[in-house]
Length: 110
Length: 113
Image (cartoon, rainbow over all chains, first blue to last red; front, top):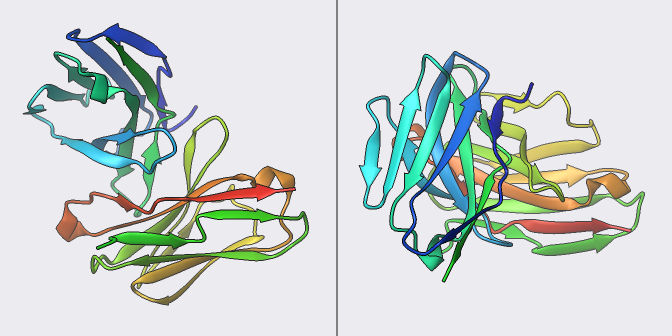
């Protein structure tokens, strides 16, 4: 089983739609959680960290469920510029390694 | 100012050759990483390294070796290149002080012929 699993999509949604991505992780001793965004042929960039109590940044909301070992990302009022691949990332308590999901592809359609 | 830089951006080479990719970060971070992103876009960690510890993903062939001349640099040396090594290689850095956010370089696109 992979350390981090995501639905690869693709998700094709109209502008203004709300879309949600889920991600599951295998190691219950995971410490830190993140969502990264990767545009085509570019490097990944941090979108937001995910905190235990859940957190919001503008149109983006991240949730963490430790009991079920999953992380979610909700994007409201989708914009064309949101089109990208969204990567779920988990860091374990031990070591300095970050584990990336395969990414979920999102295309926002005019 | 470029935070994490990699050279070269593109690398085309023959099977069996030895090549190096360089990475530099000017963020003052204490940990650096190398990732491989294959054709299926899966980003897989290869190494993480700080002053104290080198962690190697056990699935990485020993043809790959990280070399760190100082805290700001982590180069990747690859011996006897194989077709399956073709991928995009990303360098990244982080520190506890940055909230563990990883900053990635622009990537090196390696094609082995």
